[in-house]
Length: 327
Image (tube, rainbow, N blue to C red; front, top):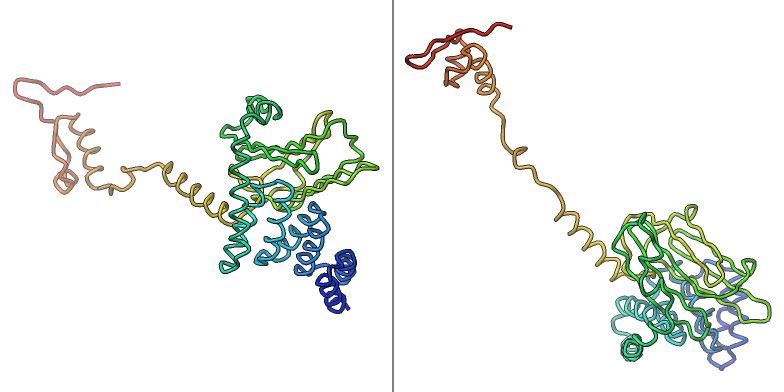
């Protein structure tokens, strides 16, 4: 049974037999593939074996199955820090900390992540100039005039895997670039889920590359597409909701902030129609029309009872003569 295998896997893990623990967790998952705890625990075994990409994939799967499982965010944050994906690590650690506010591990890792991000930011200008592709610095040049404005760009490093990626997005579409030179299309696999993206590069004789983020928002899988170019893999995600994402990966805090900002923007742009609030006095309006027709515009009364009870005769000013126009 899966529970017996899980118990044996935990025992192997505590005895520092990480390979054996990994194998037992994998066997348990074959019997119980919807168990979020098993994925989170196997992610920890991967971390001990320094297989950080696989650890992130398992943590993402655990979060997908149970978004309230704090240890899955802890595993993801730890693995992403080791991969130098500090932005992703920070988002995962903050989400996990909100679920387990008393867990000191999140406090410690959050502090360490902030230090590493500060270091990276200090060195970023030189890196951006010498290493970043044109689309990462000036994304609008690649987009063309047919796309919406308000594009945002973010650059991430995956030094361990040698492939780095960036993205830019409009309210309807996000374009993700993974910079892998001279990769044959047959080595690339891209799968689209409702809110999950899975990218794998399997080159014979090399360590496999996996990138499986839980996306900031939902997408429409059948409208998404990708192409393998000479210098990169270009992935186009078609959004289910027309908003500009503030990050590539999901976090509760950023998603909530996005909704608040969007709601405020819609409210501020809503037109007001003062005239629609005023009540129309139909008696007065009919009196005005009748008076204008019958008196040729010479009578000023708008009293409907007076005007409606009789024909309104013309009353020209003193010294002037009333004439009827014929057509």
